[in-house]
Amino acid sequence: MNIIEIKGLQKRYNTFSLNIPELSIKKGDIVGFVGNNGAGKTTLFRLLLDLIRRDSGEILIESQEILKTEQWRRNTACFLDDGFLIDYLNVKEFLDFKANIYNMSTELYEESISSWNVLFRNDKSVYVKLIKNLSTGNKQKVGIISAAMLNSKILILDEPFNYLDPSSQVDVMKLLKRQNSDRETTILLSSHNLEYISEISSRVILLEEGSIKADLQTGSDNVIASLKDYFNSCSHI
Image 1: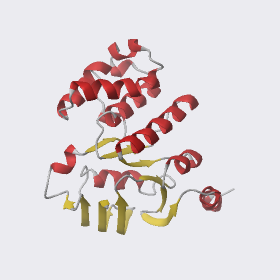
Image 2: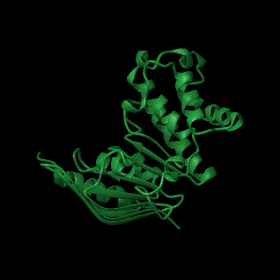
Image 3: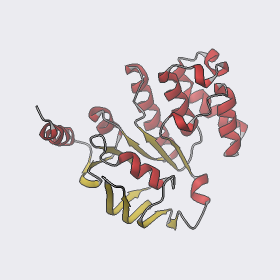
Image 4: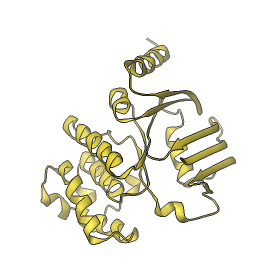
């Protein structure tokens, strides 16, 4: 069953154009998006979340056009950058706020926080700190937790491994795989880390100048090799 369907999607800027004639994502898939800076990954995510308006085409979530319904918003969680944080709140206040918006039960909220608390190495003092006073890495963790804890049907993360130390990157990868396995969450994420995104994803989509260059099923070394060959070919050295 396809949970996301894109048809004839276009978004034009003065010097860039995103053009996705057709793309379907199955329920429960983990789909990784890769590409050089400016390839269109963030633009695509923002279109999927209706944060920017498309010029043409359709975006359907659970067979419903997102411009004609609001239900998909209740079933979709995301973290794209620190603009999604409220930095004058402390961490607990912000997470409580997100939980209230999504009407999470106390039981589910506590269960989710308990699961993701490992990112802070179980240091509870982080929760009383103002978000604006956190390190860049801890802000990234707060953003990831605030989206992933909602246990939505769809989770969209833009560069989730950025700013994280190596151990935290591994933790995020394992926690996302667990959430996908336990709750069949459909996860879309972008990253420049080819090894991690190939390991976590069931499918990797390569974007180039706003178009799909390749759509690869993971599970073999050929995916990593193909991606490395492509990026080596883009090098100017």
